Image 1 (cartoon, rainbow, N blue to C red):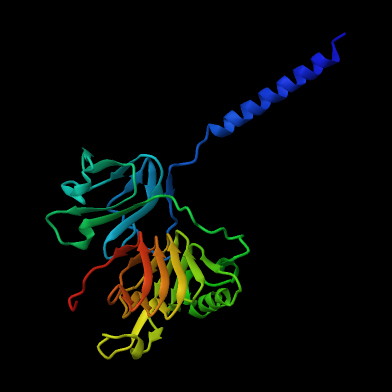
Image 2 (spheres, rainbow, N blue to C red; image 1 turned 30 degrees about the vertical axis):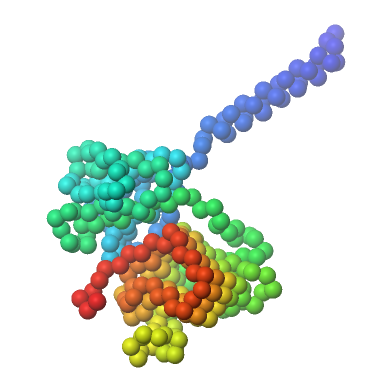
Amino acid sequence: MKNPIQKITRALLFLFAFVICGFTRLQAEPASPVTVYSVPPGENLVSEHAVTVSGTSVPLIASAKNYAHFAFTGTVEVRVTDVAGWTLSPTDFNIPVTWDGSTMIFSLSQPRKLVLHNHYSNDPAQFILLFADAPEKDAPLRTDPNVLDVGTLGLDATGASDVTYGLQMALNQAAASDVQKTVYIPPGTYKIQGLRMNSNTKVYLAGGSKLSFTGGVVIPNSNCPGSGGYDDEGCCVFDQVQNATLFGRGVLEGNFVRGHLIQAYKSKNITIEGVIGRDAGGYHTIITRCDGVLISNYKVIQALKEHE
């Protein structure tokens, strides 16, 4: 007859081995080092080139200058096809480049903003911008009680209809709280005439989200010195506010309509971080008579028009 202690010991050893094997199996599938953001509805993708990062395909989005946006950890290999004879800039980064036919190959081990371009052409289609970010550290949780999730409001996220009123009401609701709130804008395309930022409020644009500006929010002349006698319009307007933040990995799209993507006047402690601003119809970003404005990792894509 077996000793009861031996039975217990064998059972514990079996359980321990089972747990270790299960843990090893879980550990055998590490997370991908590359984060790719979803493509907002209505975007046009470029098919003439392909961008891959350590084997992961990254969408190449058509804009005034075509661009690809991703985040990564560690060291990754970047491949861009059909760019024979193109140059990788800034050259001061001294990034070694190799070629596989017409495919450019190089490695990245830290965040970079890069330009691939055909040295012998001014055609915008002969440029590719690569925005290689570090992973986000301060992305809010949609379930956080201090987060107002726009995705729960039933707003059109396809870009088919204007959602200015709904988004502005969300910003105003957050600003009315006794504690600082974050307005979370999830992936999707949101057509707006412009938004007024509020004091003591954060607005987070998730990767894959886009505010598509059609014009309409007017800042009075008195608040726009140097405007040449005309009222100015803006996609995101910080007008005499304080302690306000616009951040994330989303996009502000200007559609080349009259107005600025970001305008701040007589405001204090303003932070703009991580977002992409593109295709403005006027001066891209205007900061006037402000104090304590921090702009970091703000990616700007712009093409000059004939009258500029």
